[in-house]
Image (cartoon, rainbow, N blue to C red; front, side):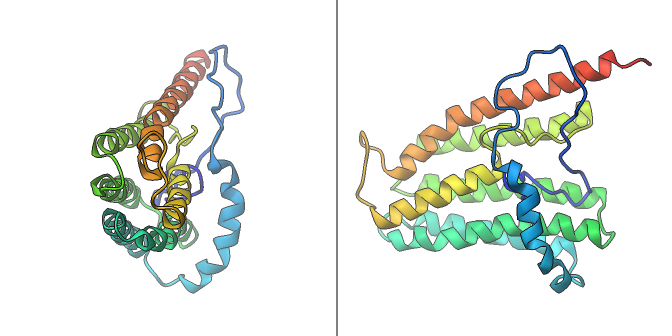
Length: 242
C-alpha cells in the first residue's frame, strides 16, 4: 500500500510500479511520472529497519490496522470544525496510514507471504480508507459537502483507472499528480494550517473547502495521465511482434 505518491499501494500480491523503457509513437500527456511516488524507494529504505521488528506479524494485520487508523482519522476530521486541534491530531494518524500501506507490501514480499488475496484486500481496504477519511472531512462543517462528495468520486475513479491498467495492460498504474500519498500529504498540510488558523478563509472557503475543491480538477488530470499511460502500454503491446 503506500509508497509515497501513489503508493496507491505496495500490494501484497507483489505488484510493483515499473515504468516501461520501450518507446512508443503515442503522444504522452505531460507529468506522467509526477507525484511523490518518485521518492518511494527512499521512503521504503527508511522503513526497512521496521521489517525485522514486524517479521512475525502477518501483513494483513498491517492492512487492517491502516484501515482502522483511516477510520479514526475520518472521525477526528468530522469533529474538527469546533476543535481545530483534532485536525492536527489527525496528521500523525494519516502519516502512519501511509507507512503501514508501504510496510504491509514490503513485509509480504520479504517474508514470502505475497498472494493475490492479499493484493485484493489491499486494494479494497485502500478504497475504504480513502472514503472514510474524506467522507469524515466532507461531513465537517469546516468543509463543503458538495465538493467533498465530488472529491471522493474523483479519487475513487483515479484508483479505479490505476487498477484497470493492470487488468487491460498488465501494469498497476501509479502515475499522476494526485496519487494516494499526494492526497495524504496535501491533507496533512491542510490539517496543520487549519489547526493554526481555523478562521482563515478565501472567497468563503476554509482551507479544507479549498482542498476539496482543488482535488476535483487535480484528480481529473491524474485520471487523464493514467489513461494516457494505459493507452501507451496497449500501443506497445500492439507494436510487438507476435
